[in-house]
Amino acid sequence: MNATPELTLLQTCLMAVIQAVCVVLFIFIIVPLTIYAERKVLGHAQDRLGATRIAGHRVGLTGWLNRGMWRMGKVPFLSYWRGLPMLVGDIAKLFLKEDIVPTKADRAIFLVAPALSLIASVVVFAAVSFYPGALFTFPKFVPILGGVPFNGFITDMNVGLLFILGIASVGVYGIVLGAWASNSKYPLLGGLRSGAQIVSYEVPLTLSLLVPVVLTGTLNFNEMTRKLALETSPLAAPLMAVGFLVYFTCGFAETNRMPFDMPEAENELVAGFHTEYSGMRFGFFYLAEYINMVVVSALASAFFLGGPYLAPFGLHRFIQNLPLVGGPNALWYVGKMILLLFVFIWVRGTIPRYRYDQVMAVAWKYLIPFTLVLVVLAAAVRYAA
Image (tube, rainbow, N blue to C red; front, side, top):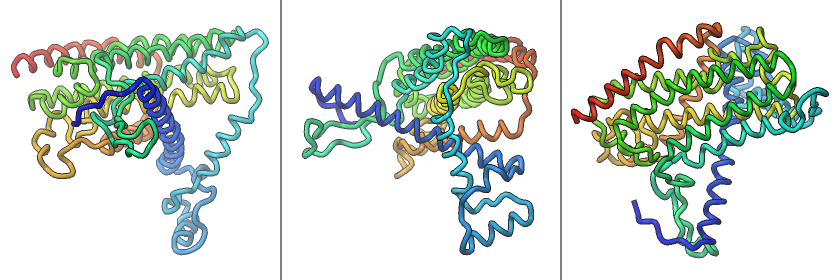
């Protein structure tokens, strides 16, 4: 890794703006792709033809095969763009739909709450590192930025994990405040459910992340990822695997996804905390949920699956001298994130919703004691190593 050159104040400010814009663009590219993939995957998993019929190949060999599959009552899978116009239509509908504010709502809080959830989910990426060094260096002929490296992260703070956990927990305020400000009983019930659920699962989720913290002895994002991939004892591999399963399970509850989507259980709460929202304010809550999925996948990829290093659980040390796969690569990181996003979608299509009392029991009775044991074992492994 090359030493970072000294930057002027203007270069520092410009790079901060450029990297923030790139990360926001990455988020607003991967989120619509995730929504599109969810339609396709659920369409195949549940044999639903609707969202997978529109557009796509109609001529040539691919079109002939697709028409044959329709006649057999199967969803065509050879036309990758099929269903895309429906996604575009849904986005256009969100922008064009009337923005309604209930008469008895607390108007100021009602309007601000969705933005609070969305901003909290995006700001987390300020501490996420996609690559431990510079991805490329600006050519010399570029004005002001010539010779300046473009890093795989916005900022490399020493307490990166603490920053992420703190900012991510702010998102629930948007849900609870929006539910309360709606002045309606169904959103209020959804908001209370969300607050209780997120507080419950925040504890085992944080404890599961303490396992890599104890093993590495740091809260720095890049340093944790590197040590877990290259320096962790092989004895820690079983702990990391179990910690990953606990963390990812809690991630479903933190993002209100099936089977833990209690705050918006349609058959109980009529869409829950965002019942009174419409148009783009509903879209903000919708986007925040998917961005939170990306955040959970990003942290799981970095701390449990090796991040930009190919092999997880400290096993990368055995292949680090091999060409192509030995060094860190941002593509490994993004590939693992996409794989975990697929698991989010897969679970939604296969596992039914829990009852609310079951959701709370899983957190308080099982996950919290279990993760406490994991942290103690992690400390023992570090002491033994």
